[in-house]
Image (cartoon, rainbow over all chains, first blue to last red; front, side, top):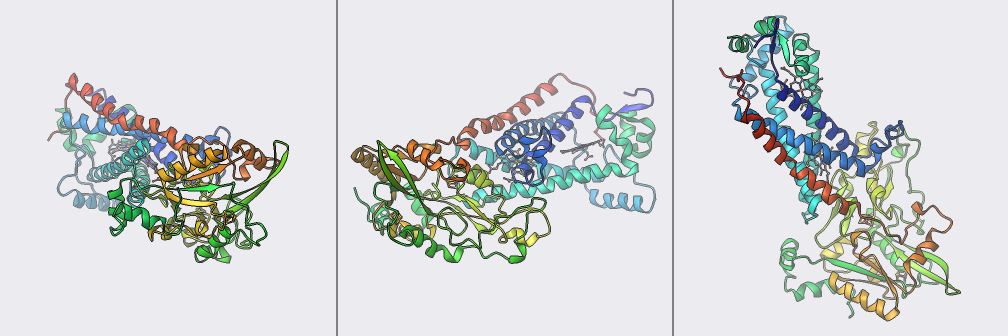
Length: 218
Length: 325
Ligand code: HEM
Ligand code: HEM
Ligand code: SF4
Ligand code: SF4
């Protein structure tokens, strides 16, 4: 398992899935925001090579293409870990309390509780991400279904789906921002590299994630 | 074939004996009771001699209470752009579509077979079968009803004017200084509210014809069940040895023009010496929404790839699971 002073945290499949979801998710957000005529107003379309950002049809194509990648990757992620029985990111009883302890520890420079592979906050954040993404996929799928067959839906119902899709877009952006902000915290910094090279320092894991470390090193 | 233009709907619905049902059930009972309208250009004379065409006057009177009353403090440029769209000082303009004028009568002159002709063309929203203004509105506030009319509800309209940008006839018109964007003011999003014809949605619900149709002294305007209007259009085309516009254009609309003069000639006259983007044309626009169908399907099939991928990736791999307690 170990390679010198490092241990594997995220195998290649997991990293590829993460980056596929992240890149298609950001493209979805960019094209989705582009459905609102904002980029033209702020002259983004006048930057070199950026004319397409205010072209609604192009943005729609980008949205469909990235939605395809996004949905495929999300479903892959769920089934892959289900089949491998990997549930380290599922919230556990007491996670809310434990998150509070972690925050308190950080604020008061006290010692954090011993972590498993992920922090209690990460498990809660994962559940929130999963919920938001599921809502975006369900509503988006419905809208795409409507666009692919143009069957009649009562306009009020349609508007509910559209506004729901939009609301969860804002929640999604907020969560991505929090996800990135987590790496501003110094204690979390060593995790940043793990999504790129898959490895984390042995010493760090031993100290901060002892419950996980015990299992992988045995 | 002739419709009583004032009470046609009551008749049509009674015939299907669903007149007493609430709207939703009536729709279910009649399947697709789509409506259509017909504009006979051989009959319209622009209400020659009157101060204002009757249809235009009827429309303006009926909708007066719905016209925007902008907050003067909000009549400022759309930062960082240096423009804003304000029609509130030009409410009297009846020669084009504006937030205060949802129907206008275009008057064009052209030469047909050596003869000077004048044609008067009532213009308003076409009420498309697959309207891009509806399918692309990011707030779902542009709506198409089961019986065909397309309307924009002002409550959630931010005035981004995307509906106008994607409408082949630039129908929806923007007024600054009204609508939800004024509530989030210093934020640089939103620009007003879009306005256009809703085919007198409230009157249709009461089984009555739209005001413009009822007001026309020449009976140039008609409304009725779609199939009947299509039959009528065919009959008129035959009778005039004329032409039809709006039935197949843009994937179909609920507004059918009938004319003795080819629409290509009318279009040429309309676009002469002007920017074709600034006038309401008789061109052949492609419906982008219809083209979208296949692209959407590609996205819809993608989850299958995820399923296959997950099974393929977990067949052979037997490396340790590091997550079990
Ligand atoms: C759409 C965008 C993204 C989504 C949906 C997403 C989702 C996730 C999820 C659910 C996790 C699991 C654990 C956790 O919550 O920390 C994770 C881990 C991680 N993500 Fe993201 N992510 C996104 C974008 C990014 C970006 C842009 C970066 C880097 C700059 C990044 C870096 C990481 C890293 C380093 C981890 C590993 C943390 C650890 O090992 O504990 N992510 N991501
Ligand atoms: C991270 C995920 C996603 C984000 C942030 C996102 C964002 C948005 C936004 C902001 C809009 C414009 C506002 C609106 O109409 O609600 C939109 C529209 C749309 N989205 Fe998404 N979206 C996501 C995922 C998806 C997925 C997975 C699909 C599925 C195929 C999808 C399909 C659509 C469609 C079809 C529309 C056009 C709405 C219409 O036709 O009325 N989206 N999206
Ligand atoms: S004519 Fe324009 S505004 Fe009217 S339904 Fe068609 S696309 Fe929408
Ligand atoms: S449609 Fe009728 S009311 Fe309108 S201008 Fe023509 S003749 Fe007058």
